[in-house]
Length: 514
Ligand SMILES: Nc1ncnc2c1ncn2[C@@H]1O[C@H](COP(=O)(O)OP(=O)(O)OP(=O)(O)O)[C@@H](O)[C@H]1O
Image (tube, rainbow, N blue to C red):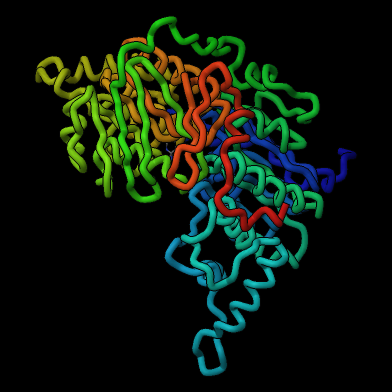
């Protein structure tokens, strides 16, 4: 073996991990070069998070070898403390920050509060230490700022700065599990500018993403996982969209194209009429959606996008204004009434708001159509058959539809909840970030299911931070800013760029960092 270990900051080989009937990792590996950003791609359930958790010592691998900054270890012996000593730092998707605590307190929850000789908390010392780290990472915030008041990219940067707080002790490897999953493009760009700066200082950074464009533009190297194995590792400069999709999907699975909107499917007068609605950040907002029409809502976080969906669904009562469905007002704050009239909402935080996490995959898939399935002697068989069809259609990775829902990978959980609502045949479908965390292949399937619902006369409102998604899916896009509709872009002019140009930041405290 002539290659010096230092050629790779992290070198994992032959990693295996089995969960019951699922071989989550099967002879998988990962090699990170110093000073580079490495993107981990892969379909939902392909093993990306399991790899990160095995490297972090959260899961104990069954087999494999790992070298981290010159420390060699057997993968099955890894403990969180050992990899931490070796220099590995991990930021998981939920960031692990407390919104109601200050940045300084969030740091101290991990590293301990410094104390004075009188054994009280040495706040001044804590603030001084945290202030120095924020400066080092060029985060324009004060230690006393509440984490909940920060913009999304800033929160991620704070979590990264906290993970790297003891960087003075030498080189480190940073693993990030889907850091941009819930970030609008603009916020992602700010985060990537900061990560690039870290890489230029010699840091090796690996991040999981489902956005191929992100991997192609931001990463130096890309590893694609498929079925628990590495389907390929290549320099980003040698990759393109089609090559990545074929590595992701494998020989049999190239996704079909997104259906064109069928001619004449948008018809009639308005099915949904939002009139002069003010609620939360929304100010006198008007919106009309016709039967068969897919209207996208773009805008930065805080522009009122999710509030709009919740006002229509009855989850938020407006201060003023009305919402009409088929010309008849929906009662403010009456979710049951809205559902009875055919309104369905797929919320952004599906796992918190819409999943029955203690139940099985098939129970979660059928829970909105129980009425239809309710014939005692039939129910189990039909429920199972329908769940199996859904699992096939959306390529949900599960070894059995009776598997507990919580054991599915994040993206597969998202697919089950979304597919369940699409089965209801709603009159009006409200979708908040419908493909967050969903892989590119299943994404196309979901777009086609939404298009099919629209072609049957369903009106659809889609909130999304993904401008490619809005341009692919929508008949028109309304851009919100400061609670008002500042632009309406018709299908003929819809491109990701036209949307991005209209989405204006309301305030820009982070701009100075890039
Ligand atoms: N704790 C667990 N118990 C049982 N099975 C699990 C567990 N964690 C993961 N799995 C299974 O291991 C496989 C790999 O999951 P993993 O979370 O690594 O996928 P992923 O590539 O990160 O997916 P996603 O893109 O959806 O986040 C999946 O089939 C998943 O259901």
